[in-house]
Each structure stands twice: as C-alpha cells, then as structure tokens.
Image (cartoon, rainbow, N blue to C red; front, side, top):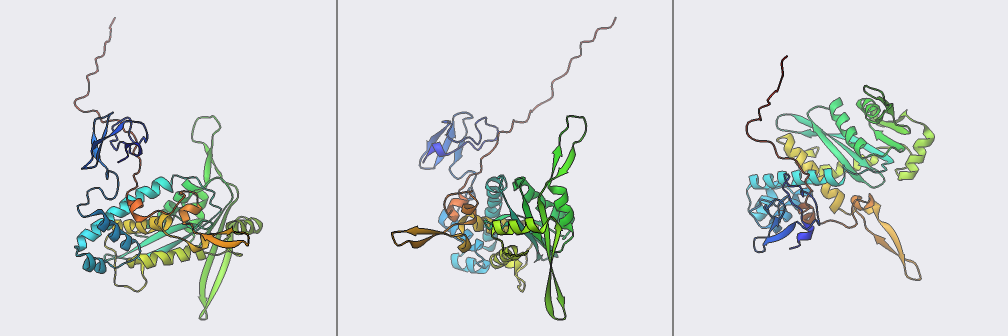
Length: 369
C-alpha cells in the first residue's frame, strides 16, 4: 500500500484530488483502507475505480471485461464463468461508465495538433427502434477522439460530435474529412470559432478559425458500379494536400481510416454487426459499450501501422517498437493492461458543501426621519 499515490475522494474536502500532499495515511492494511487527515474520512483502495463494489474476485471482473471489450458473446461468458446475464450486463455498464470518465480526463481534456480528423456515423439496431452512433478519429495517431449516440441522424448529433473535436483541437490547420451529410458543413462552421474581445459591453463577435479544411467523400451507385465524388467544401487544394502528407493520411481525399475504425467497433460490439440478431436495449448500454471498446482500443491495443523502426547493432538490424494510439498521441508512455485501466482513478475536484438549515434572517436597520 502506497499512500503517496492516493488522493482523498471526498469532494467536500479541501485536499480532494491532490496527490502527494501528505494527508493520506494507511488506516487498515488487511482491509486495504486509507484515511485522510484533513477530513478524517476513510476510504477503500478501490474507491473511484471500476472495481469498487464488486463482490466477485477482481481477476474474474478483469477477464470478463476484457472479453466484452473484444467482442466475446454474452452467452459464451455466461457459460464459461457460470455467471448470470444480468451480472455480466451490469459489469459492462459499470466498466463503460468508468471508461467514459477516463476518456474525459485523459483524452478530451488535452489540446492536440489534430491535423487530420475523419468522422462518420453507424446505424445501430435496437429493440424499440434504431439509433445512430457518430465517431471521430485522429488520422496521424489513429486515436479515437469520441462518439455520440442519438435516436436520429440530425444536426444535434453532428453538432455534439464536432464540439468534442473542437475541445481537443489547437488553433492550427485542420483537415476535416466526412461523408456527404450536409449537417457537417454548418456544424464545423459554427464550432470552430473564437470570441473576439474588444473591451466593450455585450457579447463579443465570433471569428472563424483560419485554415480549417472541410472535405466530403460522396459514394453513389450508378449502373451497378460505385462512383466516388470528392469535394472540397472549405479550403484550398494546396493546403489539403499538405495536411494529407503531414498526417500520412493518403494521397487523396478519403474516409478510409474512420471506416476501418467502424469495422473495429462492429467486430467488438455485437449490436453494430450488419447481419446479427443481437440488439441493443437502451441507449445507456450502447454508450457504455462504445466507451469500453474505444478506451481499450486507445490505451490497450497495439496498432501495427503506428510501430516505429529501431536500428540496432553495427549491421543496422531493424527492431520494431510497438505503440498504441494513446502512446502515439503522447498521452502515455506504455501500453496499459485492462486491469490498469479499470483501476485508474479520476481525480475529484473540491465542491463546497451545501448550506443546511433555515436561512439566516436579514435584519434591516432603517431609520425614518
């Protein structure tokens, strides 16, 4: 037990979320509990992780979560480990919610030079209807940037996805490659703007970012053949070619990388398969599965196209250095295990406690002449 690596999870404590402050001591070694000397609260070692509250062995929870993140059928997990289907579904929801917090802390809070981003939508079959899942990927590092689930393929779905990309983007040249959906044009133009403060009263004027390239790849069937049309909606051909070369995203406008990511999600989430009897029940379970697969893909999966050559010896023998998308983006320096991902603690922020009881009476001392 290392108290120096722990922080107080109590949001009402002034030392909440601070690591290495010397306020955490060991309270009980057998039960693996710590104590905060500031608020005098004790907490478990698993507090704030996906394993908190799990009664089964931790190894079993890690094994089941790993299988779920790689597309193993639910019935196979139930038959192998002799578990109830509701238990496995609850574990998937719990792991997905934790991965959503990890993704928000480690990916969405970063400022990256994205260079080249591709986005697309997937139609998901459900018991009460269909849903739409919009995804985005950073081409140069193959990093999954985020996703949104909605009942309709409309403007709010695309606007929310583009806003997630906008939060992580630096104000630098960016190539945004999408399909022929017209909602992307308005969403990109509205999101990539910054306020111009002039010192006057009122709402500041919004200035559009410069060098934001928006391209579309439209696919149609004509006479039994596939026809591909490539459009430059916003930007110049010279800057598009330069960003394609800098991000190593091909020699011409394409959406191949987001389509390959869609194939990975379809492989690992049974409800995304084109011809399958597996259906998603609620949007919450679909969101949990999306974040579980996406976070494991970012931090725990080697990507062959991201490996780097390492020349060793006098003869210059090549040794390949493997990398994950998170390593390529500079978010971590090693490949995470699923257990390390599930045990990661997201720091909490201090929130002043709510005032209880009756409000104080305000006595007005007024003098009349």
